[in-house]
Length: 208
Image 1 (tube, rainbow, N blue to C red):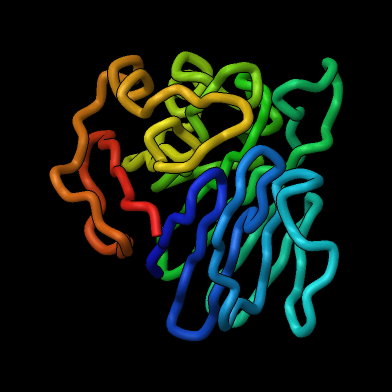
Image 2 (tube, one colour):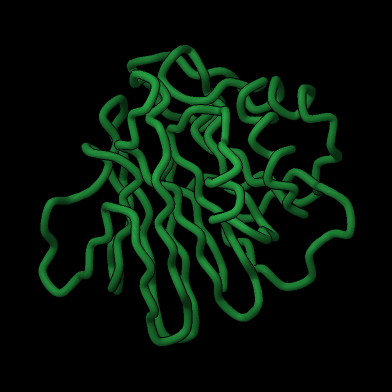
């Protein structure tokens, strides 16, 4: 499996047999997400994905799904700016070829024991870090990462994406300093989940 990044929360995962898009739209910037050959779209909250796309299976709520060469589990979460008890956001646990990935989205930073149990073992976490009241900031994102205990963290939705956000986003460096983990030397356009680090490492991606 490999992943590409298009800014905001927009990602594209490719396996040998499938192409999965995550949050291909944004409500605070303009994205140029690539939906060619996509057969599944995962939407973490309203407004970040299409309502309908011909020939594409859209997942926009909690549940468990089995596909040809990957599995998906949608886990309910509180939206970042919503009232306590709200569960309008969805985190997605994706598994393919023994690699377990958690895509977080704009959630409340305080994960419950029930959520952590549903998440289970995670190798990679992909998490927004832009803050400014719109999404997780450096402190909140680092808190989620420490609770989940992955081997690799890929930060997204930051001010150094090269995009103009209606709600200005903090730069990734703030999150890196807060987390205190080393940053991988490479910054690829396509990242392949092959050999994962032994200790928690930050992996930056080049925006498409």
